[in-house]
Image (cartoon, rainbow, N blue to C red):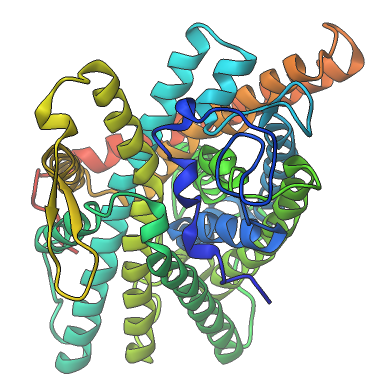
Length: 486
């Protein structure tokens, strides 16, 4: 099984190689690919592992809550529909990795390059803005999620030692600052080929905590001997009619966020060897990973709902649905924190690379931007320290940490991110690029079907965004900046 073998090289260095444009196109040889870069080595399994690591993130923990809002019929149906749309549009996007001929056409190394090659013009700027805003948002979402898990460990131990007598109120700020400090250190790693170990650890951790969540859900159902929940979801009375609508919309956003990885699909595809063509391999990898993810999501979402019914918490492992065994909860929450440290880097590296590449293009003469200082490390290769990288990446992490301290609403943030990124990045751009790439004539049956799919997903995105914004507005009524405690 080669799954873990190459996971960590994630979208390997060449995915974010800043000299991408400069590599002269050459014919393929034993050591080099047709674009003059070192031979790519990725397979169906490594690509599937990359996707699963990127996808099974903290989104899985809000699925029991999302299922509770929608009920036994709509919940699993919506999960299945999102998985189908993700698989289909990812296959369309995979076909856009090369422009022109699917086997020998010009490669696009990033999502933005694919948009530039196929659509061009103003759409490239819109795509870049949405993509990088989304990556920035994910960094905030992950900081909040990590602090909630760290607090859950502290509270679980506090509850245990006081036998439930102490309410154990804790502020989330110190934990966000701790997470930020760790990320400042990891952000100094220049690119992906140097954090292979971090990515493998992250993949193992995501399966660990999801499995613990699932096992605890099954144990709870076995203990009570009945499946909770109803066909239509949370009952009116527990919440008002209006709240029910908003929360159902927000649940759509949460589920969309749990599936989003189109942001980094092209980068993953750029690690795959050919022949067969990268698009064929990527389609297989997408099918494998989306199937595994959907099965996992169905199990976690449905067992969480079966265990808690209407009371399913917004974050399965920290909503204190489970008090015992407390040590198992601690392991699961520690696994979440470790996974999020790695996942934060996976999502931020493209943003770091983009800013640094732009800075070098704009100010090629600047010593501050281009200078690299070699720092000797005993027993290792000298570390190449760039002052610009040190300062800019540290400022970025500090900004995300401060915003997280201001906006600590995990569920709503997850919903907004899902809604904001889902339609443009997962549906609209892949559909439009595919139409251009395959020269599908306007008003043909295929063209109309693709536009209907895109329009339907836009409506879902708008509804999900509205639900999440309504959630934020409700939270803001009782909110004091920097004063979040649980």
